[in-house]
Length: 81
Image (cartoon, rainbow, N blue to C red; front, side, top):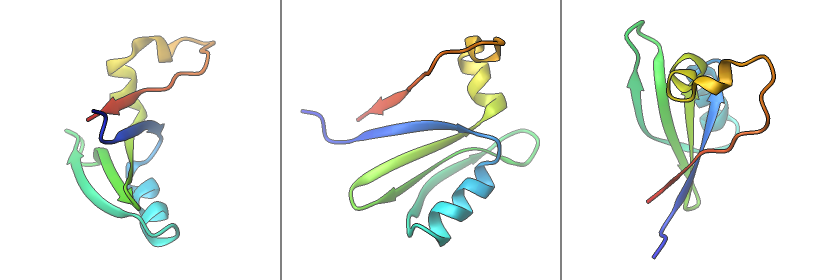
């Protein structure tokens, strides 16, 4: 039985995204992981039973190289738990 679904959003800055979702929208930080350069590689926030994952562009493109193409159609990646 599906319990939750987490949207994974590619962002330029995980830190900026976290700040906005926490300070403005009232989400809480569930977890975060730093990258080798010291910035956050990804983070997950939650609110009212929903979760959103933010992943930095470099990390996301490393997992999905097609995103580095000049022309990319819409891509949605969900983590099912």
